[in-house]
Image (cartoon, rainbow, N blue to C red):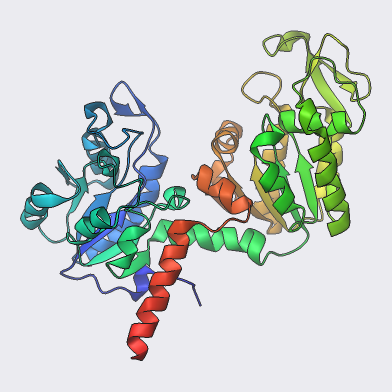
Length: 408
């Protein structure tokens, strides 16, 4: 049984449903440059409108810090959403108050309206009870379909659930179901791949994962710090020398938990990240003083794939190398293609998330071939850290309140 109410539990016909979405999409020259989050929202909007609900979409956009910033209005995003949805989408100049109420009163059943940026109100990020109550006055039910904002205890993600029956949208439900299958109750063996530039940004992730998975694969600049801790001289490679003791602690914790840590045995090196044509392969104990590690080498990549063959579940956050620069994406793309094939042909459960990881999967042409690819950034990272996400906890508490009410 789900820990939260889903749309299968909701009677929405003739109701006004407030949907917390994440419309904080990339923009270029006033146009949405990546509509992935809009695409993920469409199934929930279609289900609600087809069932005869009025749908009002709540979202933040950018960081206006509690002030009205015209450049951060959601109006152009509403227009883009209409194109993706294939239906008209109205826009209201506020997310609370008389203007929002008037726009909702005018909206016919089965239609969608986007309310203005919630962060134009200082009470949004402060989780002001008065603001969340004012938002709730506009609707009959609340649906959270924004996992990517679930790590924030804001008025539109947490506070509002105290005033209305609260449900998980289809995208939120899919996210939590797939993430749960990856770490909460996975099919073993489980491998976690964690890359990125710096250990300092993912210390909590690494410490949590070594207690949950059977193999931890470390890539990117992070791997350099672990290699430095093991005594290797890495030339000009990016390292965090002040975190070598932390790296040793993580390695010790992994050993105590029975988790194998995988680090590269060879690497692709170059004098600069822009000099790929002059790059070459060395073992990690033979990095020239003038060069830097920029990707796994072929031996490390093949060794990793050999180790991965028995894996039944994989969680991936962060590339193995500087994939944006040729040829330092070879290991990342090779791994992506292998995971995609194993998912299709062998039933591997594969879950990935994080902006760089999603971009690398797209570059490899396999983004659609994994079990699940999360569009969340900070929320995905905090989930990997084992943290409680306020937006998810709020849905769980809302279900508990609903059940207690039914029992009386």
